[in-house]
Length: 293
Image 1 (cartoon, one colour):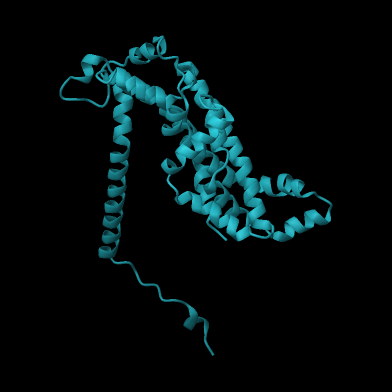
Image 2 (cartoon, helix red, strand yellow):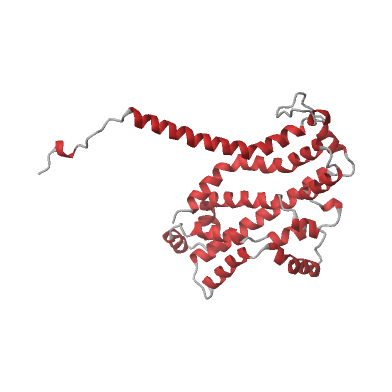
């Protein structure tokens, strides 16, 4: 019969060499991570710093990260340029981005709910075909998609940027994986209480998908806001262009003025950075939750 003394584990004191080795390993790991963060942030910090410098300070040697004299002249020049209606470009990007994000969240969550909780003929085949579209490069689909828009007569319009982005194969996959973790008993109980299928989706499933919806919304926001190729093909009128198109045009006109090009770049990526810092905890939480089964 084992006694209490036999069950008590033996505690071995940690030697000074082990403690020093642990501390050194932590220092090396954190040093590598800090160096990686520095290399990652350096281009952004340089862009931000250059946008607040004067033209003479930019070409001065040796270069400096922190401007000696902060100036907003580059931003004033951009906003006062009559050839660049930047307020209109901002509005176009906001309309397209928020419309696409809203439609993707609705279609992806609804399709994910259907694929996760319903049984119907061809379900697995349909889901496989949806996932297969993720392996097709967008450049292959551009011409057929553009011809469809021509027949619908929505080229050179913001609608031509919104409609093709209304669905997302990645979004459907992400939502399906999350909805599968919701207990089926909860949905069955709602049916017994007389809830309709759409009522189950809106009242039971959708409120529990907050983390996954936030994750998908942020990814979709960044992808749509930074989209360049498709707006370049569809939009021909200046007043309907989005910010990435404006940035390319501005760089071609003022490539020698680093202060102007860097200020324009800051204006383009600023909303993405704000959205990321506001919702970054939802990204981590959403990925963690959707990774569990």
